Image (cartoon, rainbow, N blue to C red; front, side, top):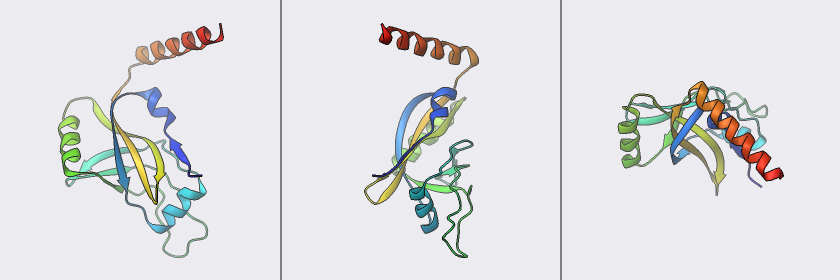
Length: 143
């Protein structure tokens, strides 16, 4: 069964506005390493560069069985989106305070996909309010 890696921290740190599904260009050793496990979203973000969207800071550990052509663990990886989607993201990112955050990495058929979210950073009081609502829902469920 294919693994789904989620960026749980993104839901806490950001208000997720709109989601996009993008393919990700991986090397052979990266594919094997993702299948083996251990992907880390801690410092991951996506940005527009030269008309393409690149995912930076995503940690995919070195595959121990690979030879001399192993990959760099935190290298920028190109995301594969339609031109219209890239244009829409470019216009959205020009707005102040919006960023692109990866929320999930999963396998769909033979390829790997990344779910990106257009997000706005939460303030401390927003995080507190979200936590209070979550606690209230949990307590109501228990009754």
